[in-house]
Amino acid sequence: MEEILRTTDPTVIAFSQALLRAEDIECFVMDVHMSVMEGSIGIFPRRLMVHRSDAFRGRAILSDNDLDVTVRR
Image 1 (cartoon, rainbow, N blue to C red):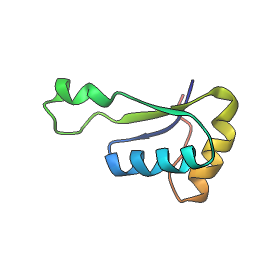
Image 2: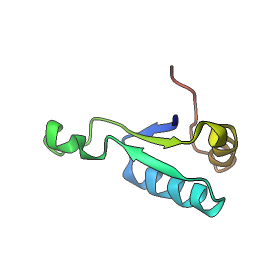
Image 3: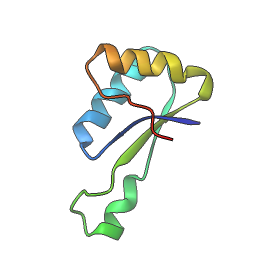
Image 4: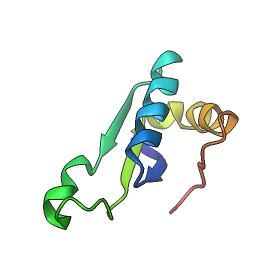
């Protein structure tokens, strides 16, 4: 799995998932339950993960829809 998006905005995550699923790219959101640790204030970002073989295409789809897909390593 490879991270293609990191954000604290749940609407961006939902939109990104819809875009990727429409193109038959499986995705998984990590760190969804971190709100328990932070007190539900939303300061920890969620990460959108895809299979490594779909990462390039996934980033292109998100980038085409004006979503920030900068690679963080």
